[in-house]
Length: 80
Length: 80
Image 1: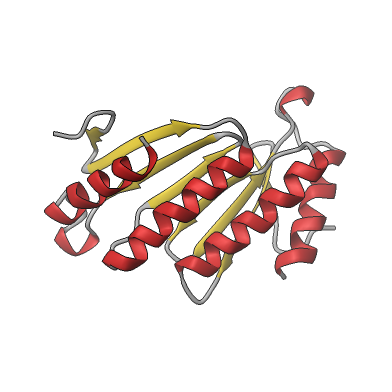
Image 2: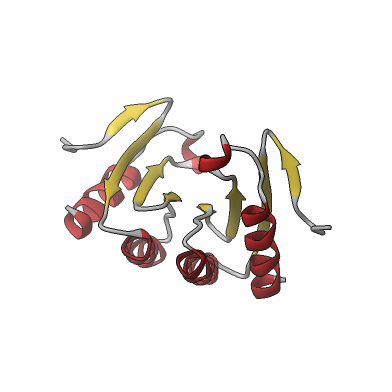
């Protein structure tokens, strides 16, 4: 169960809203560090104070895999 | 003149490719700092080692304005 994440079009996706742009960038960097450690990278989009994190597994035919749900849980633990 | 930028759908957009994910995140943070100083924010997308920067001016009816071309020039000066 992944509160706050949607599972559509073979992706898990969630958006966070922060106080400003730099906070959103700092959050993106934190997600990037998690991704590097797992060697599984989320797509990140920053629109002013919003960060959208989107994950899929290309090696699984761009389907949502256990690697995605585990990364999503780690991202939620960091940002929620 | 903005080498490397496209002007389509009332946006200026360009993509940079870096050695890795963390370099792309660092570049995004640099663009964010430029944006904060100008109080004019680019939309940023990070896909592994690629950073896409996209700018438009909402207050100008989401058209490309002088604020956008000036931000694009500053981003190119930072990342090219």
